Length: 257
Length: 257
Image (tube, rainbow over all chains, first blue to last red; front, side, top):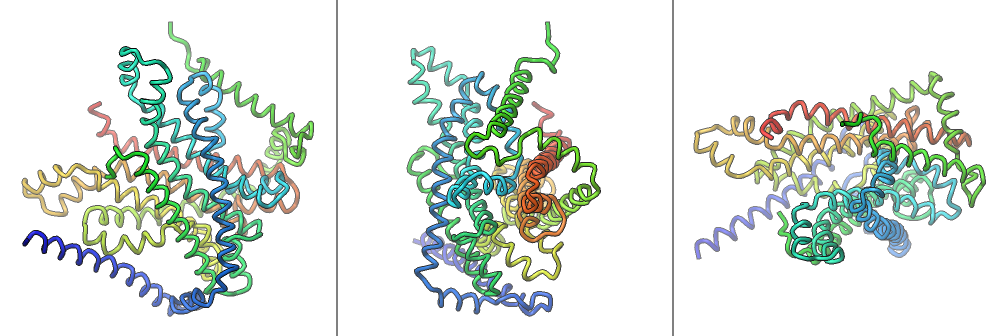
């Protein structure tokens, strides 16, 4: 019984500290607006008011538009990238051919592709979905390749000496062994897709939360800027949490550190 | 018999593959397949590159972008490394500071752009701020996890031997977290480059992002490719420099291997 109350006490103090942290954030924000240089900054109160006064339906439409673009690009990147990464990881000749191209394209920031994408693709949606796809593609492929390469060769040799055929090796060793890396790639990709969608929407300006935030800036609706930012942040966080829950479901043998 | 490294199988295939890729691109643009005719071709870009590199405005753009990235990255490291180390080390500090930071983290640096250009008096601080935000979180996170993955026994042992907290920090926390911190620094550098391109495209005067956007507006498309290549090279180069410098600092790690 004393152990239980100690546990409860530390739990409450932990929660209190975390709540204090968030309160601290809001407090610092509130105080910042009194700085002369930042006098145009809207405080937490006006942002909260703007959020409450929101026209809910059009805003949700914009949010869903961004979510759609992120999901489409991400899913396409996963469908193409994961098998491609596995193939490159397994077959040396294909790796020798494709890996240099990937290595050369990888350092180019996805954002730098925006002008070319706008040139090449006809519709706004395809322009933006290409950019989200591109943002997600490289982390996914790169991490998948790393995952396949990182599998202990002794596991494969042991399986072969026990009479496993190639399909068994693939299904029982390569696939489970690569999964953690695939998920790391997917997690990184989720963050980058949100980055890309916001950038593309701000620059190409047609719908979505990035556009909403940018429009708030051009129409000098300052509190709305922060509402837009916060919504993007919330949706981004939700995507990561969603991904992590799938991670736990598919790989129960991995205990989260 | 050992083959010289310059002509080994992998380098040959890699170079051949890159050349094929460039050749394919060139053909697609020349033959005007689908909408490829609208894109700049490799030869056009090379030509434009040779023209651009000799212009003084190019040097100005490169130095502006590099200056902004380096300043932001340096400041972010200065703040995020100690902060991350302490957050990883001390549970109370983690509970007090981390939730506030975690709430801000999902907001992509780009979403900060309208707020940044609105509230910072001049262009320079607003661009540097975006890069700072971009670099800050990867560095912070990696410093934190770097400390968390240090084997507990180091802490126990040092305490048994009577080490004061300052000693523990200097001899256990810092060296133990250093590999992860270095990864974070390289990552932060990459994100800072992404941020500078986006911020310059939207807000900037001067800089490589601005150069790319300007080329797009003036329909001088080959210059877009030149800008992309330069950014990629600089980003890649700076990350590589960090890794080389760190392998010097971390020589004691691989010494025993």
